[in-house]
Image (cartoon, rainbow, N blue to C red; front, side, top):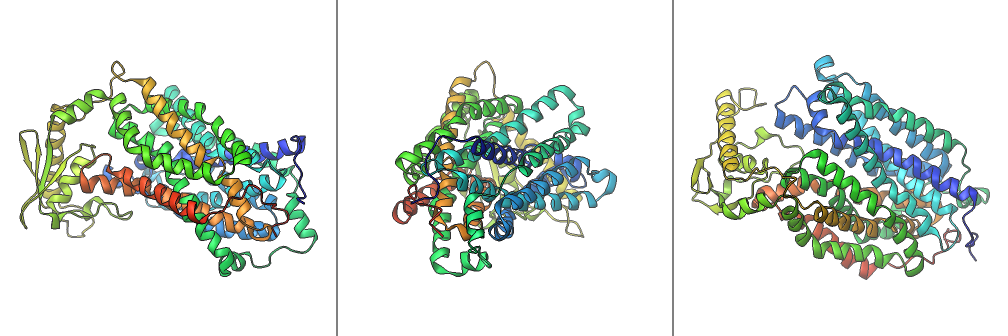
Length: 556
């Protein structure tokens, strides 16, 4: 019989959920601030580079936080399984909050030169490490306090925190932008980062009053804690097999659905659909407000009908509908742009051997010197769709917009090979200007117009995407907790979660960009989440067992 029996939620359990969720909201708020302010960060900390390179390096610094999350999961997961859940995720929130506050104080490139971006990347990595340890601790802590039959409902509150953190960061940025105007990009961007110290103080104060989880306390009293959780989790096949299946049969698909429904949707609106930032952020925030209660709904539903089929159902629906709903959203947001795209044929005629893979996370603009790469970059950076036409070997690429032909060029580097030569730089700028002017003349850069935008339809589609997020994300914490025994639970569940979300999800933007650049199809990048979600559905259906009735107290 399970130690925890189903009962009405006690005051202590409410406090556990509130404290864990509140702290995690603040951590996600801290984490998303950087992503939302990447263009400003580029100007402040990478101003020694040209604008395109600065923005790319700002995104790479953002990606650094995602890439180190699995290492945070391993490090803090080990501590959590050895010394306890409470103190470990108290440490993670301190690291996260202080790192974010320091970003708000950090002098920019103009003040201290190269030291500024170096310190910024270090702080981003510390944030990623802390977040890698935070989620597993919060989810495990809440699940081990939950009564039998209520773990899905209780842990689903933790699942709301990423969405709420994103929403709060968007709202704070919007308020500061509206209040400060042009000064926001000069110094006002620091305010959202500095505010995190207040949120940190509240979170630490609340968490200090919590007790250790009953499952861990019981295990510790019985002397059953693991002395080598890493070896047990990943060195024994019976546990490693579950870690691998949890990654490819659950969290990989969950991650791409989550990132597509929130991050990629915002990116799609502001770049491809050319909706202004304020309108796009407000629409996303509204969809999050409407959709967030469904985390609790699907978490609670998973206690009744099971977790597996809700999560896999969300993956399947996403895989089947993305290629329908995103074109619908483009047409609803910017119908004039769609008409212009249908009326104007855009092609790149080039030697295929000159066309490179442009999704490398370490590539710089100067790494693409062929006429094909320069042509594709010029069109992809302004999100103009095009078709590829193969040309004989050695042919200089030719861009054709309607009846207008614009020849590309092959670039050369300077003597230090760290930038284009002066002549090439000038020629590329003129080429891009010609492309932009012709695309603008044909209506291919038309901004979304409030008078023609169907905001109701856009919001409905965004809500649909958020509901898919809640399906895959609402029950996932409970299921991951139930897959592993208490003695190695923190370590074992954290790694597949953060590889799935940090790598499969975090790599979605560069892979999508590369796929669009390769094909010229602005929707082609959707194949990445579609294939991953479909693969997770198949693997999860065949190999993942339902866990809702597992007794986590006896599963030692």
